[in-house]
Length: 114
Length: 114
Image 1 (spheres, chains in turn purple, red):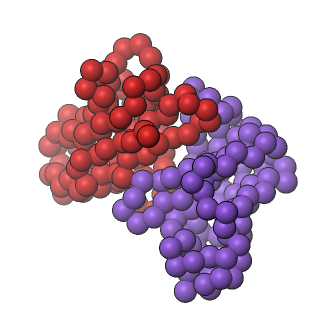
Image 2: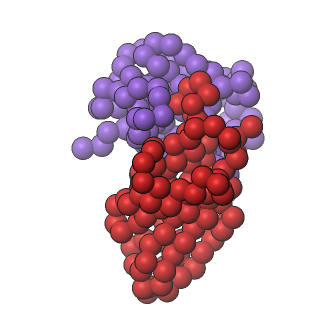
């Protein structure tokens, strides 16, 4: 009965080689988020989709892109991963993009860059 | 900019001891407050939340938290911890400046010794 699913759970990529992380949800929520969590740091919001509208955080590097082809799926694309991009990437969803709606998190994908 | 501080990085307690984890935030406007828990190998789960009303909120598994507006604090408490409470605990603040952006603290690792 998993609600927010992330694949793969572990991803290894080479320096500069594009990589895509996947997130899907069974909650039919309107909003999907991507967070980056580096070791011993707080999760940090990269961007979110409200339906088809993409909302980028001001300090998210251009190297990070996202796609949401339909309600259920959202992808995180890292065009040219650097060593500093090694982190846990968390996907979350919420019904609406306001503070009254809880965010539901997936298990995360741990990205290693070699 | 908004920030969330969790001063305790690692707390070690014996079973049946009382727990209090500190959380302070810096933001002068209206906030919603959350505590999330991440058990080993699992995803972030909501423990409790404060939106408005009674500043003492009760969550799952016997946890509670108190919102003290004058101190910008939202400390988590449990009268008697169990071994199964061993996990990472994250405080998070949601402001209403635009998107549904959760600001997380860096987390507190709780280890409960049987």
